[in-house]
Length: 157
Image 1: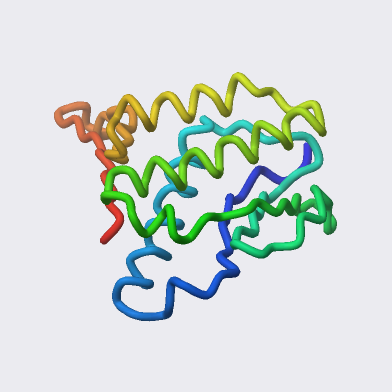
Image 2: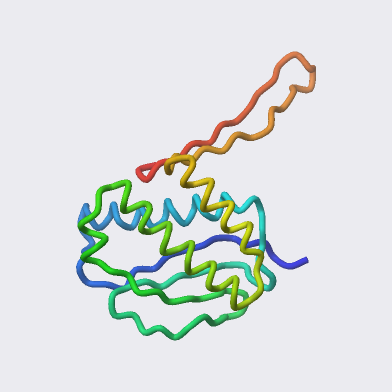
């Protein structure tokens, strides 16, 4: 068995969103949505793929999908003006849609299981972008205590 899908990353190649506090929030949003999406795949690994990278920008060269080793790379047009005009929740949805529809296109090209990605997308929408993962309870060795981990994340954490 090969390596697991280690992450999904979105790289921005634009000019309107600068490296300012507002731009920093944008990059945290990219990381949050891609991490949430990846973690909602329940361990699914597309064949021969250890990482998915999505390059987005208004003038990005659409080179199609390609592999560099086990890294699948894909380019998508990103409308900066539209994104900047949205509310916070709408920005989350914009990034999620951009990522999800890119992955569906990759699924079509490489024969990946689309249902896993659709389930991840639907889970994020249903949760209203609240990242929560509940781990199974563990019983102490002396069987007198039970502990359980609840992982929550936000754009700022």
